[in-house]
Length: 143
Length: 143
DNA sequence: TATACTGTGTATAAGGATATACACACAGAA
DNA sequence: TTCTGTGTGTATATCCTTATACACAGTATA
Image (cartoon, each protein chain N blue to C red):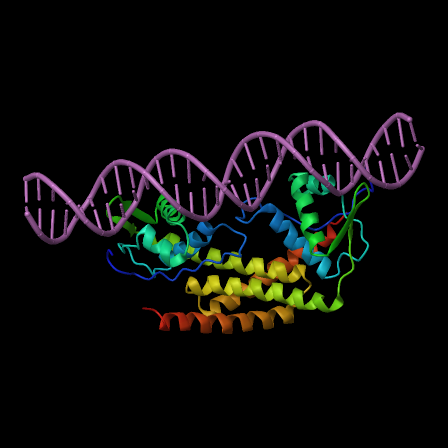
């Protein structure tokens, strides 16, 4: 194979109702905006990435295309797709916005199901502990 | 018009990537499982509900049909759609599961964007305060 | 050049959202 | 009772989005 394996920590969940391309976009956008993928990084080819994600190459292509339209990626035919440079200013703004949005959704669900504040407090702590452990484990298994 | 207006606190967001019918299903399921809609309650007609949500009647019909297949609703042609009886046992189990899931998603987003634990703590508290106020306001404006 | 990689465009199938026309149920008037 | 109107859920056809497969075109390197 080509440049032989840059592993991108993105997962997709078939059971989620939102489209596959959207799941990948959200996560990849996060990796770029958080600086975990530096400017100039060569991403996996659409086929290679598709194989990792177990989806079609066209779906990955759409992700690359959308993010290129946002100015986050730059792609050259025959060569590959690269991470573009980003305004440091817009970075943190966007970053926090996403997280706030996610938590608001969670709280909304909790309120709708009549969870008390204490219940949610407990759930949030446990969720953090569980996911934190998962994430740290992921880094260890990186190849 | 018919029975003239039972207001169901369900909202849909066009901008969300997941399907409309799914958004409504999640929220209506929540209302039933949390006991806010008692057994035997006559729901709005598919047309009336569709008008409230500003979507098609067919979309509402799909929601009613799906929830009927789950055993949460019972529908009689020409008469309407009613809330069915539910196992008290399965209720809380399901309820908590949904909230846990939602918070895990939020934390996942935060970790991916390299939020510190303290940042998330703050975001969660603020999200709670904001959404709690919204929800209480909603009840006040109920007609 | 030959070859093996890269991204790109076209065609096809499945799922979601809608409008429109249809069938059933019940209440009230003739 | 019989009829008729207005409510209810139901079925069909159409358009847009999503996901895929397959053939095409540019690029790098031996």
